[in-house]
Structure formats: C-alpha cells, structure tokens
Amino acid sequence: MTRIAICDDDQTFADALARKIAGLLPSADVKLFGSAKELARYVTADAAPDIAFIDIRLGRADGIRLVKGLFEGRDTKVIYVTAYMEYCTDVYETEHCYFLTKPVTDEKLENALRKACTELGGRKSTVVLAQKGSAVRLPADDILFFESNYRKVTAHTDRREITIYSTISGIIEMTDGRFIQCHKSFLINLNRVSSMELTYFVLDNGAHVPISRGMAAETRKKFFAFLEG
Image 1 (cartoon, one colour):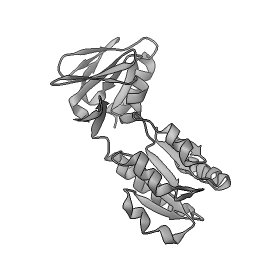
Image 2: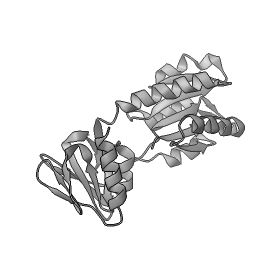
Image 3: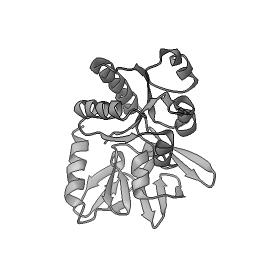
Image 4: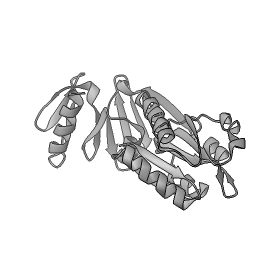
C-alpha cells in the first residue's frame, strides 16, 4: 500500500486533491495534514510517507524548510504544490520529484503520481536501521527475515544479526512488497524463500520461519501473488 501525505492549510484544496488521488490510486492510504506541525508529529524515525504533497506556504511555516527537516536523506518522494510561481526555483534546494502549481489539473497530477510511483519502484533496494544514534544501511535482499521481541526487532542476514528498538509495524513501513508478515513476530523476505510448507517457510539458507495459523490464508495468498509477479 502506498502511503501518501498531503500537507496543505487550504482544507478545500486538500480534500479535492485527496479525492483525485483516490481515483487514480484506489489502494493508496491518503492522510491530510493542515499544518507543518501536524505532519511533523506523524513522521517518525521509523516511518514516513512514500509520497508527500507539500504546500510551499503553510501559514507562517515554510514548506521547503519542512521538507529539509523531515525528509532529507529519506525515500519519501516529495511533490511540491503552490499557487506562487516565484517559488519555482527555491524548491531545488531540496530533493523532490515534481512541482505542481494551483489549480492542479488532472493531467499534471497524473504525471506527478506516475513519476513518483516509478521512482518508488526502484527504491527500498536498501533498508536503513537506526541504532544508538547511528544507522546501518543493508541491501534488502541480504535480509532473510525480521523477528520481533517486545519493543525490539532483529534483522537476520546472511552474515550477522542487527537488533534495534522498533516494532514489526515500524519495519513494514520501511520495507517494500518483498517483505510480508507471516506471524505476529516475523516479517519474511519472499525473495529468500525456497519453499512454503503448511506451518513454516524454508529459506534459501535452510532456516525455518513460522507461519501463524491466523495469518496462514493471507500469507499463502500473498506468497503466490508474489510468485506470479
């Protein structure tokens, strides 16, 4: 599911934009934020939206500065939105994938979403795990599975194990469709699966990862959908 944030202090415009996005991407999870502070409270160290529509003028706040503070160095695809053309050069101070001017036409919105989704398709080839003030960047397919234990999650890789303070839901926010949850405590990399048995996966290194009874049907559905491409 693509997570989309709209941060705009014009509620009427934001509502209309959300409806248009829902029409173009029905499976997207679209959330609206009326201020920079609201969006800042939503974005965490573990999770950020996949795509963010950011108004450059947010009351007294500066949307460009907001992007610098929240999304610099992250995978979020930023689409700037403004009614003021004089800001069109300022946006290049930050990473962004599109610039829209109000009123936003359906064609321009579709182009912006297409570009953002195309770029997202090539992202998350790595997973960044933050620990003790530092961060470890791992190639996604070096990770066999994630295992949670209370408020800690361990990434099991071919060569080592890395434990951070997080939750399975927090890890899901950072990963792509190759990772699925097959148990309340396990998130598995389908690219590393050799076979799926009734109650567990067998990985290409011989490890077994359990499949819970409650998640078995949905896990099997996702596994075969993944195999079909």
